[in-house]
Length: 151
Image 1 (cartoon, rainbow, N blue to C red):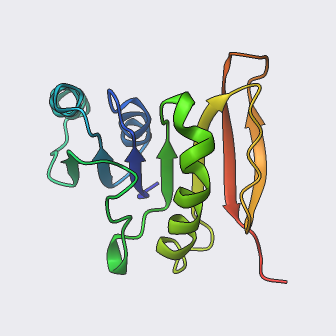
Image 2: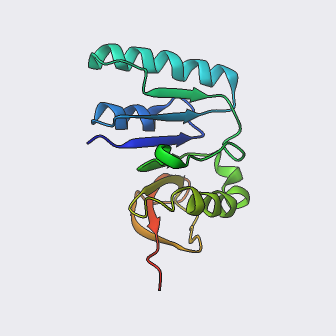
């Protein structure tokens, strides 16, 4: 696959590590909580050992995902995973998608994979919802977005 990813609000790093196990070339995990960031580092070591690969193409950034630089230049990700605390989604989603539109401008085919509760709808301006998996109130769902084609 060779894709690069950005895992925002990484938690345990599950999204990025799954991408890695399926052939991603590398990526960046962003997690604000120090204990969770340390856990991501441990999980990276375990997964890389299991896969028999080096961890040098993986970075853990301990920072607030709402303020961290989102890539640019040759570091533009192919996949962006976003799994924020559900209570913050309504507040942070518009700003995140606006920043991602700018950060991903060089890769219009990049996908944003956003986890959110089933009762919440997201329709960020300038983005197209490609697919949503899962359903039901208070159940996690995953929405796949791509930048909308210019009119």
